[in-house]
Amino acid sequence: MKIAQKTIRFLTIAVIAVITSTTFASEADRKDHPQKDGGQVNTQAEVKAYIKHHLKDSHDFTFFSYSTDSGERKHFGFSLPVIIWSSEGLVAFMSSEFHHNDDGHVIVEKKGLKFAKIHSQIYEIDKGATVVSFDEAHHATNAHKTLDFSITKSVVGILFAGLLMFLGFSRLAKQYKTREVPKGFGRVLEPLVIYVRDEIARPNIGEKKYKKFMSFLLTVFFFIWILNLLGLTPLGFNVTGQIAVTVCLALFTMVIYLTNGTRDFWAHTLWMPGVPYILRPILAIIELAGFILIKPFSLLVRLFANITAGHFVVMSLIALMVTLKEAFGPVASTGISLALALFIMVIEILVAFLQAFIFTMLSSLFIGMAVEEHEHH
Amino acid sequence: METLLNDFSPGLFFMQLVILIILLFLMKKFAWKPILNSLEERETGIEDALKAAENARKEMQNLQADNDRLIKEARAERDAMMKEAREIKDSIISEAKEDAKEVTSALIEKAQASIQQEKQSALAEIKKSVAELSIGIAETVIKKELSNKKDQLELVEGILKDVTLN
Image (cartoon, rainbow over all chains, first blue to last red; front, side, top):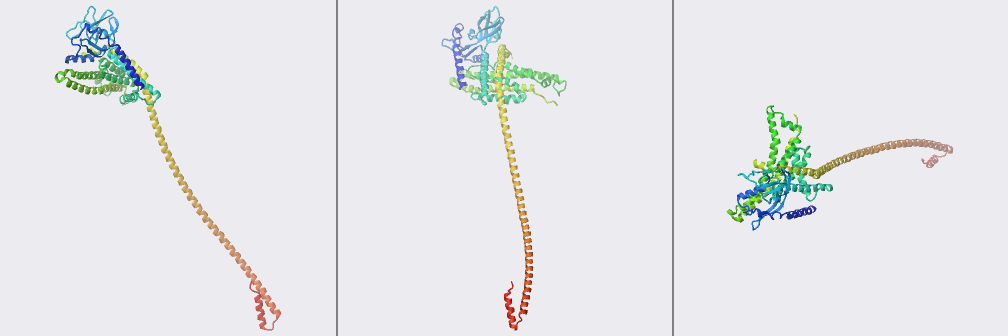
């Protein structure tokens, strides 16, 4: 009951925060830059662009957008702080200053520098120029990327997932002080922790050494799982589909297994015993490449590609509603789209767990390889 | 590959790294350590309890076996004692019988001997009294010197009547 009450309180606060910050976008927005089509997504190309836009990180948190009868585009959501390391040092402002523009037409001036947002990335415009000019491939020619430490939508998602994890599991931890067996939501979380320990860590790392890596494996498992699931909600997060996030996770795993490698591990990697001497350097190169490049790369790409593909497929299937309207009529296209999207959504829920599981499983497998004590003959 | 690199945001990478490290630290301190420790404690507790139960069961079995053994021994001892007692009883009875036989036969012998003796002395006494009586009769007969034989016979008969053999 207590957990439910707290959740309700949290949600209320969140909703209030959202509502108070929503109206920012509509005020001065589209008077200067009216969109001709009212922001509607009707053609295949527009659908593709929309999906591509969604798959990228965003500097605003938009729940949904709509157009009024007068063609004014309204966005329901809230802006997030933009923090960038420019040539003049740290610059911070709210993303609302870009007025939801994403093609470099709105220019924000701070500290005498001009910034534009192009495809969800903040560019610093070179001195002297006033507008961004593009080449044929739509690359900015007179602007360069900045180091972007903004609290983007993904960062919000990461923080939100971290908060959920921390609240859920610290509560479970507290329960053990007074009772042997947890109750309420802890009863759901406990078997998951035991699952990670007994099915993932123990068999792969080994009974003796698994304890040291439990914190990392548990954190990563729940972090990825929660973010995968958040990605399936209408909040529209795509955190585990951000290559930067998966790179970070994979590098973390790599650092852990490289720093914990035993003498045996390095001996077998760099100077494989029982193999002709000529082959040993070649094997060493292969093994090193495997542990430093291939294994982390497979980890990061697998997670990134699965989640991105999942989002892409679900959004495309939802878009069938629009793209098939001409051919099948509104009812049939909606039906087809709903049925297929529902089907894929169910699979995606499975994939959300599966990818978290695979990432943790492979991480523990690699750690297990590194900490394994070989028997000497 | 180029789009992948283009999409890679160093800023987001940095934010994720910082947040993940902080999250790892917080989760380790406030969640994973206490959770895993109490899970382990509980598991060892359960294991110990199971072991204790198993030990108790074995002990019970041992006790049961001991009891059975003791009962068996006691029963055997009782049987042996009973047998011994019976033997002792039998031997006592037979001994007593023998003793009694000896005693009775001795008594009988003694009695017979004394009877014999009594008989001898009685006979001797009879002989003596018969001799005395015959002497007396002879005396009287001689003393009286009866005229006729008839009187003499009557006298002898009369005397004999008086002297009924004791």
